[in-house]
Length: 331
Image (cartoon, rainbow, N blue to C red):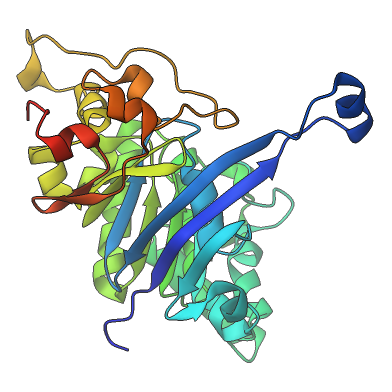
């Protein structure tokens, strides 16, 4: 059991029916329209580590985050939490306490009518973790101090804080139930760059001190490099590449990963020609045949247009690319 991952997705998928009403479809003689937000992905997050998922907007990252905490049920495959099916695990209060989520928008994820002390204390009350109000208030003070805020901030309302301070409040609320696993859905995307660094350093410090496991969602590769043990690159609901963090930055293999790397600002690349990825992200309702990236890929061949690539080992990475498999890449 010591080797059991904290979270594991096994060929997990999540589809959404975005069809028009039945009468309109009947009159137009059209079928259902199914949006394949997540289309069969598998990965595991070992305990005490951080796995980050990156990719362009609309690739399915936030859907994976909601699958991971049970806000969405999978349309196919399984989601396992500490060796148990997530649906079964979430039926038990103790299992729900062990996972929490930090949302993207610190302005929308806090109740504007509650004082901060009540926001942070709500999970403590909901799970019955402390016996009386005095103990709860002492725990709230401890949590506020832990995330770098003043105990007096508990008397204020969310609108009295900056964006970075609100995200610290969100982190304190997530930690109040003594979780072991945190899903962080782009927790720094709404913040200034200097504040992003403070929040990331805080999360790394908390992980080191408390042994937390993170699933970190972001569209910013420069951000995830600071916090990740492993990184998964998503494209149109599937995993394109998995690799250890430093290995991914040192030698990206998949053409899409390389295109994302080209978009990272870097003073060392001044004067060097960048090759931006061309075209538009295809619709997840009508994805391309074969490899979903082939309409935008400089290495695409006939096989790429006809056959979907599977994740296969490439050094210390796992890559879903026919060109890599056949040695047609120029890495």
